[in-house]
Image (tube, rainbow, N blue to C red; front, side):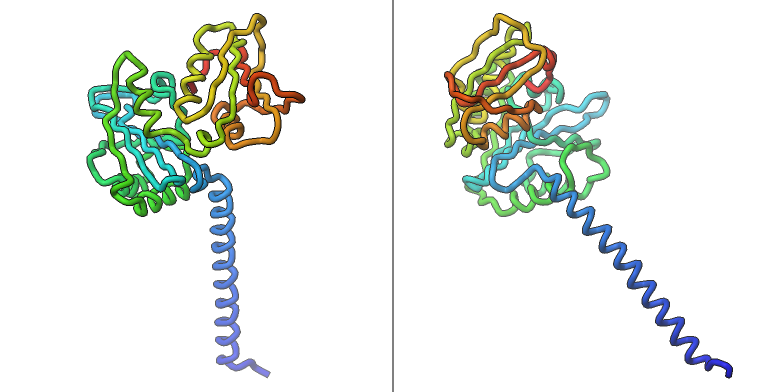
Length: 278
């Protein structure tokens, strides 16, 4: 018997619907997998201070210039913005060493913008122009930082112009007021720094970084013997300060059997003597 035309159309429609559901399911699955990895790669946990250095590429320049540093502090529901003068010409490669701050993330734009605008609007412009920025943070974190900034009361937002001078103590005063990590400061974990890289000054530079985020450095010394590999050693339980240092410095941690002068001992080895981190 010949199949009716209506039956054929019904089967064709059903096949098309099934195919459409299958394709939609693949798209949804792909989106969920992407979202899972974005969340897993998130660096802003909404509980601890997060520092974001931002910069643009002025006309006629080949290198991005640092224009500001945003600092998000969920513990106190506050937000700080340090603005660097337009004539500072501060490069990203010089920022960490000059100011003793290791940022959690950076954003370099291919366009000019003004930091005189409301902070949420600045972050919103980064979201809207995501194809014209270079960054090491993902879209999920950028969105969360924007939503966080929108919720911060105006009274809890501090905007200051950073001091650009040869005396690093000028910036250290700003940093201690605006960039202190309240969780690390409350832990007050003692830290010893041993410079075993064979290059002077590294211990003091790292000390400055740790003091700027609220850490407690009790000793800085130079080793008599050069160590080829850097290490972070700790006594007792793992702490937020320990994990923060491990993440910042990309140095593996190892447990100590007994406590000496400090609970955390950082040995700077030859492998990072040319670091640009601090």
